[in-house]
Image (cartoon, rainbow, N blue to C red; front, side):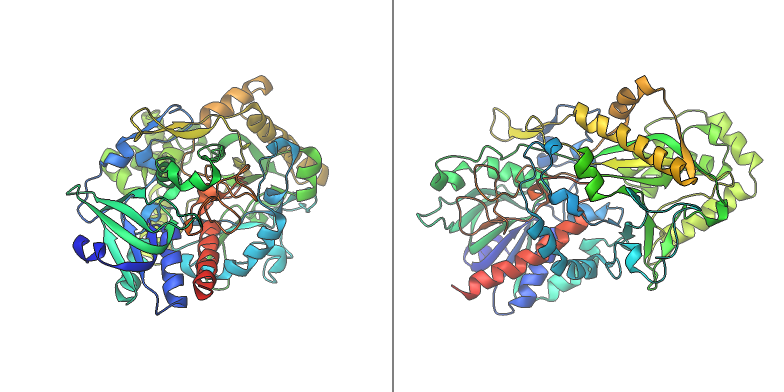
Length: 553
């Protein structure tokens, strides 16, 4: 549809952003309301260059711990799912409990967590990650098995799993559905700029949109607006539109603040004592073929009692760039990843960095590993390549068997909702300035939970941890290796009042009646989970909520 035509129409809903959240909302709402009209507005467009004005006007104040904007997001239909790995993880009960360590920063309720269970199945259908059972104790096929010999659950668990999508590239997967939905209009190359002033009841009548290519503006009129443009751009739009909060008497203090991601990295290995062939070191396959994987987590009661941050720890490979692992297959894959052209085709930048750590080192030693490991040095990568790139349901990652029953441990940890971590507009009113750092509490919790895991494994006679750093080196090591900006949350957080948050539990922007946010920016706590899947459940819930609102009006 042309811009001029859009300018003359009135819609029931205008959705800003066509990533997984925007697409799920738009497809769900139009399915539930075949007589109502939806406009799906996307900044990206076909033929757009890699460099774009939005990412160019993001300023990262801490490039050590935060990826560049070009590594965090994608423009176009499907959004960041274009480079998404496919990991689907559920949030946990503890994420909805206000603990002292989160400093009154948990502004959503356990009742909301329980309600979200009603939308998980629908989200799983969109993400194509199989039957959404995230606890193997509820699976007859796996509940009698453990991650390693002699392990038993207690304050440490091994039954919570991550499920893996195809990975589903939402743009490719749902382009046909968008095109064939008669009540859904998709417009590319439009930047959401300025909302109309809310009336006394809080209703916003229109949104001014700028054509990305021509710079001409047009107006979208709708009964409701859903901001699903990702955390960065959703936050920037709201910061740029303070008039949305005029009925409150001012912008909520939480807007742009409490920005969170995850601490992530490796500081230790685990050596199990049992039979290495009985260790679940890699992927399991569900009955329908979906890949799933165990991780160590910690019980809700223990985390609350000990005032620690939610953290997942899973078995991993040694550092690829260090040739001391002596694995020919790992050395081959590392060398492939650091090759300028091939590496970019094998994995998106952020994922490639997690493998190479940005290091080009030890090439002669890596070549030696490959030669000593022939033919396995080549056979294993070829087999992995086939499963990872040539099948419809792709192998999500690479985890290599250790005959010594020793595996690196990868941690993925919650952050404290710290008001100093924030997004704000620069003096020009356009640049998005991102302040992001790690707190001592973030780092201390990671260290303490490794100690807990070590003590538990020793107590059970299952294994023990082997640290890569001296005790006094651990904080600096964690700070140096943790880098996020991909799992963005917190800047428009859910709360029961505008004094504590930006949106209400139904994702309505405080001060308005018909503007909603569907982004992980609404999550007040980051938990241990990648946010994409859980956001999909929120998108399905929001579609149902807006449907009920429109039915009553």
